[in-house]
Length: 393
Ligand code: PMP
Image 1: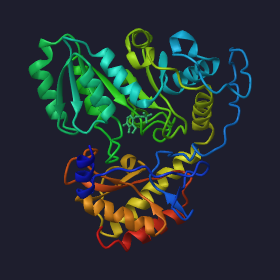
Image 2: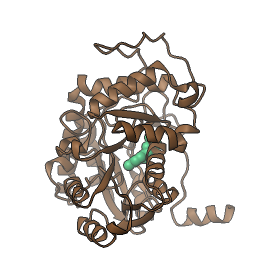
Image 3: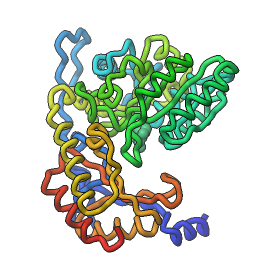
Image 4: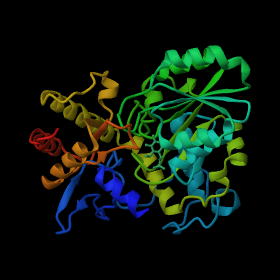
């Protein structure tokens, strides 16, 4: 192990923990000096807000919740860990997502892996995007279905695979992220939905980076593209823009009931703590109450992309939806270049993570800037200024 760690060190691939401030999400150096954090997925700036009591939604018939909520859920959801707050959050998610049913998981990772592993069974076919998040990949690996990985966003390949293989399998599943976590690009969801309909396949979309950021209702990329009703099963996380922790799956009642009875991380893991669920509920409530937050973070993303372009840094000329995604990669190639650039930015007062293999393919290491509604335009401009001075970028 020691030898392998040293090899990772030499290849600029070793990871280390770096403590963040417990209140502000800033990172602190060894002298106690803060760094502006451009690394978190707290896209709306909610994670650093103090926990308050979520308002009881109008028409809510559940009994009032004692405040403050207890620290732990004490058991898995099906035993006795599913509290009134969990139920309220499920109701809020069903409303936001306009689906029949919803179910919570202890994390987004558990939701992705547990959903795909349970739904796709032996005798089924899964088609999975090559750049899908590890949690979807692991769900595919855990399932007993036959798996094909299609080249990133290659809908022609999806169609060709279905044309050749669909008839040999009972069910076919197309599995994709909506917003890709390392590139910030958006899957060709409209074309995938049309192909799924043509070949009697079911599209499963992970909206981890879309929820609460995209769409006029704030429910994600599927909403922004007007295809919510064509994507029957959607997965989300409570841990990013919603500012809390946990995951969820929304879809038809029969799918959710099936997951409740077959999805292992849901059955065999303790339900998220009520305090966490209260935070998530506040996050879902803020989607409707504070649309300005997602407008602000989208504006910051456009500003940063335009600034990078004017510095001559390659930015894909995507449509206006993609330009609002708060994940902005700056591709540098070698892992050493990415870590050196991250260190130089750190010295100038910014935390921007270097993303390296195995998270991204070899030769595609990058800085990944994550924006938040808590950032100001001035902070984005200051970051651009620092990037302009990077010798390696
Ligand atoms: N899906 C995607 C696309 C992600 O980026 C992540 C988090 N990195 C997850 C799922 C897992 O979510 P969580 O952090 O809530 O486990």
